[in-house]
Image (cartoon, rainbow, N blue to C red; front, top):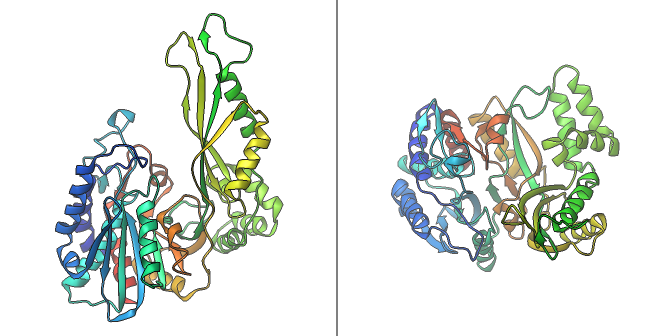
Length: 445
């Protein structure tokens, strides 16, 4: 019987080979490296030959892979999700290694996608491959939904969900990334917390644009395009979205309070019970605590003049909002306009979706995840929450009542901070436990 220790080196080698293929996604309509995605799909077929042979496979979208592994009971199904694409990475951004080297060193696999999301992808597929090597047959149909544009649009995942709907398939469980086995997640809580997303925040990207006549920098006007834009950004920073505690977040804090040690135990329980006051306290901490209780606004891109001595005739900023469960796209846009208070600041929606529904925190499927984690990560506790980022899982709430988010890879605070950042890497040992989790989950269906 394979163990996490024996599974880890094989998972690391497979992950390293996939990281070397730079499947960087681009917004729809922009050119991207088609050959890299072709090579990645081919690598999946050759790296997991028994699974590829056992599955009915179809391509959805440009390179999305939708595989069905038939089970003994064709009337039941689950969906295991991961994505092949990654965000851009450049060595000159400060990486200590080539971000697409896939180097294995110091007990880690290094490179873009190690955590988001090729490590999870390898863990999922290798679990099925090793079970097939043992003659395993799943009890239910298992669908592998491997998106190719999660980082930009997720249209391939939406198409996969639509196919299930057209075919009358109602999965009893959908599992995607969006949570992790998080060490150092909360002050005073020593045991890692397996953060399982019951739902996720919405997404809204908006471009703010200000236009003016431009001109020579030697005679600047009283208020130019850049001045007007920065005034709008300052107003938004000074008036953040209100903070609230959802029932899921209150339950999370109360649960953590029962697990914490020292002075943090009553603090966490007190915050959970304090309602608006507790939400305000978390909001003042910033970072992940604040993101739990409010819609966040981040400025991600800025553009102005292209010359040092020329006034900008057009200045723009892109805002990335993650919408709390009680907010909506329309409501957030209305608030942005109220706070900015300047009709000369144009708002253009680049992408948007409302927050997802929240799955049942008491469903049997969540207990199934807890049981699998007890085997693969016996040192961790399950902690339901609302995922702060957007995932492809949001596309599947229409076809399944039980949509959860967990990539079963252990990450400390520093590792989580490197997702979409510099020097992303995953511990080899964590990969072994990830494979063990999926093996246990599939065996318990």
